[in-house]
Length: 368
Image (cartoon, one colour):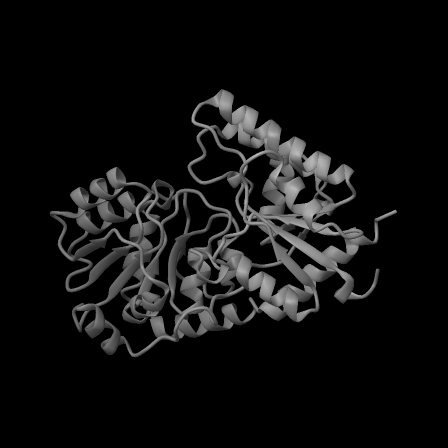
């Protein structure tokens, strides 16, 4: 098979409103593949008996490719026994689908699911799953190095295709003064923005502590934390921590896509003090708006920002976040923004679509 028009790909699991999803990654990837002449179909369901097998067989065609993304949708359970049973069901589902003649490509977004309840069982599942897939897509070189060692497979099985930008998904940025007026924020001073799902692994508590302990550095500035919380108790915890801290606004609510550009336009710097991360859609989002990012040198973050790395810090340095935030008050943020834009230019979806098609072709050519 050498004509891309003959190639059909089933994307699983998929959001039922891809264009409006919290993370539009799949929508953008599918869009890039369609431009390359690929037929992309989506299977919305991840529950019930053999959901992958059902989705694949319903769309069966010679040498179809099943492209899997987040496997956490398939492995769930409130206790370790139910979780283990869920892992077995997922692996059996993939195995029987392979025996039917389908090829598998897996994009690894995380080493383990964020806030995994049973990391040992999940790692065990990933180590078995990696043996069942034909090719692995990683979003950066560091991910390849990390998971090849931890999942125990030959790194030659993996290929690096970066995470594309979000420039064409949201409204274009507007003037800083106008954005702050729209959001009822102060006209003067720097705004440090943390926007995204509010979850424990994102290090927000540490960020609040640094801000509270160093009020003299951030006089006249504002820390704006916005996003849907992991749960209500976590939202209350963050709000309680921030109650007595000057210059902090926490808005624990979902930000509609139509308003995202206002927050990034109003901000001078985006702060992402992750505790542990391999890849970050939040980083890509900030870069898509041309914003300098304060973040640890974890996973593939340094690889993604390229030369725009002035505000990345050593995660082993207990004062790394503080030092970098202090540095952000002195450096030329406009020049750093220009470097961010340049780095983001490399995350082009057309190129990503082409490279992904080549991965599909490589597994198709192995068909008997």
